[in-house]
Length: 208
Ligand code: MLT
Image 1 (cartoon, protein in one colour):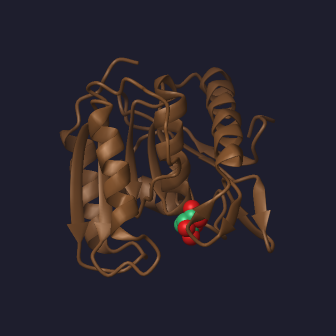
Image 2: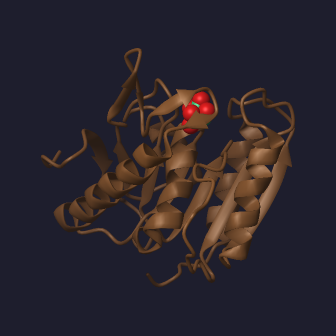
């Protein structure tokens, strides 16, 4: 592993032409968590998987929160820029293109913040159980940027209003949004994996 600004795992691609995935774990996860998900949803794609640099009672996250669902937005902004810088480092260290983010929970929220703050870093994003990380995101042009949002109809953590606020922000910014509610709670299910795989297969590569 190259010595970059985030602890991470990198798995080189084995299938030529597959977009790299940026795998972003949920609270309490680490850089190994989503590797099996990445291998499943995009077989043969290069996988880049950093560990969040914030610790909440020992649990890694990608940004600070004040309480559950209440985010420290100044920290969200700062950490999104740090993550963007890491992705740039990884692109040159490993010779990869801009990745598609696959983020779960806190990882989905930082991926949404990246889209709003540094859109050129990502070729697209699958946001699994995401909330709106910024109450007032800057004006950003996400024209044609493919985004998948999967919400659970029984999710006790993501308030439906926050998921719809994020969907509205993405749509107003021009993203090509596929939004689906799946049966289930906050945890990922086989349905999430199948839908993410299908979306990645359906999504043409966009130049970034
Ligand atoms: C967050 O803090 O980003 C969300 O509440 C999801 C989570 O619990 O990580």
